[in-house]
Length: 297
Ligand code: NDP
Image (cartoon, rainbow, N blue to C red; front, top):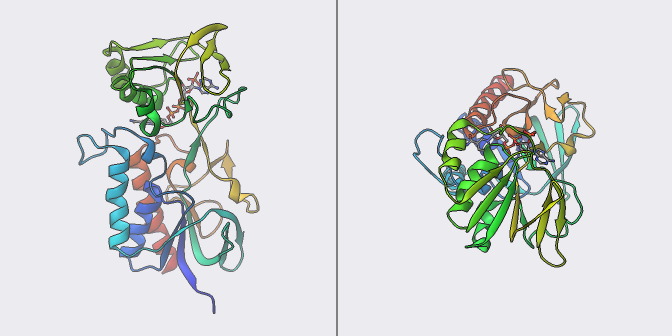
């Protein structure tokens, strides 16, 4: 007979891995499914300075610390993408690799993906001057001039990282107000090679085989690199055949991390909430796991 897990956790970011740690320590039969590498977007974060216990740590190192806990607890992890879920007697989870997994409960912790500008040449020049990850690609732009699109915490945090590598960093914010926290804005203003341009909308990306320039408010800006940090969208496409309540693609949960469907929970960046932080993702993972545990009694 096919094995039925107590809980399948979809997505091994901070919230999913935290939920797995809590469930395994409660002696539940838990499995993690991850489509890329454990850690999710934190892998692309250059500096974390607001997670208790660490004055400053880079994203990949924080992920490795958590992943080593997963390994020490012998929590199984399958590397494949969930393509569908059916809500039958047990939950049935269909993977891209052809595997089918049965479980009594599910925790969805699939996070979010960076948004694209959706303007011509963006896709074609990814990896040829255009990037969504300063930590991954910043070193290609040593002593060069780069632009960043966006005015949120991500854009400003990564502008600080790039300012230590690049010659000049221009942050282009489309409105007259930055969304980032004040402490970051102050740090950025103190850097003499970062310039913030307000009311600046990118209209064109130019370059044949490699990025050459962008057009902002119809004026050309020459740049070697373009980093896009304009927000994120929840990864929920695999929920197409299941009637989970969402708002603007964010999964709605109650304070116990329960969705509207019995036995299905969600946590981390894919849920609708006020604070998208590593600490809240971890906390929601713990809450979701505890709720699952109570349901399984
Ligand atoms: P945000 O949604 O906070 O900011 C997106 C930015 O991109 C805004 O300035 C927005 O402008 C701009 N933007 C959106 N669409 C476009 C477009 N088509 N063209 C140009 N500009 C555009 O996203 P972040 O990724 O920065 O942050 C996501 C969440 O993660 C936030 O809650 C943030 O606080 C959190 N975070 C926290 C960190 C920390 O605490 N250290 C670090 C990183 C992220 P507009 O304002 O005009 O809409």
